[in-house]
Length: 272
Image (cartoon, rainbow, N blue to C red):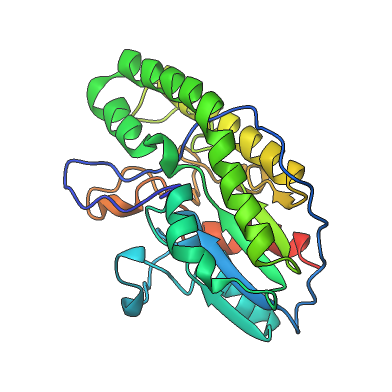
């Protein structure tokens, strides 16, 4: 989240998920099935696709923090596609994907994955304020972000998805959503229950707008929320980092287990 990027300031919380709702219509593009062994696969997106939070970052990826533990890399290792390239980058917004990532696509690309949308709503700042400024500020900022996303996010997603369809016309495109952060049935230290409820609600709105946009574009939408059930923050075996002062950038991102046991199987089940 980033849909969620890396925040290097020691006082900033890196948790770049966003909130949004209703999507505008996109030109329908037929989904194309990708054969795993022969796929030319390109992974696009933000920190959830780069693998922030899962460790072992590839030094050549620099501040993008791409990891071999990301779901796309795990899928490539298991399926030996004809080619695999990840240009996913921590902190990426929809405009960053258009400017910096789409050049990896071509007419020979047969499979594309992407998580995007979280960083467009500055959710890292919201998470900081939720932690430092309390419940009222947290809820108010989430409400404001939702209102902004309802107005602006659909057109941003439209631009990204239309460009992907144009640049990779023969590809199956799998758009993945974001997990809810908190198990609201459990009580734990940290944010108030009201704040946790508002945050999960904001993520649900974000996933809703992404799903509608992806389906209107003729793409496959992959919902990861149920895959994280029982492994959210406040559960005994979470697959998401809570606030991590030793590595702020990993806060509110999937762990290696979250990539391997949630994102990877959900993505894999949609490819074929």
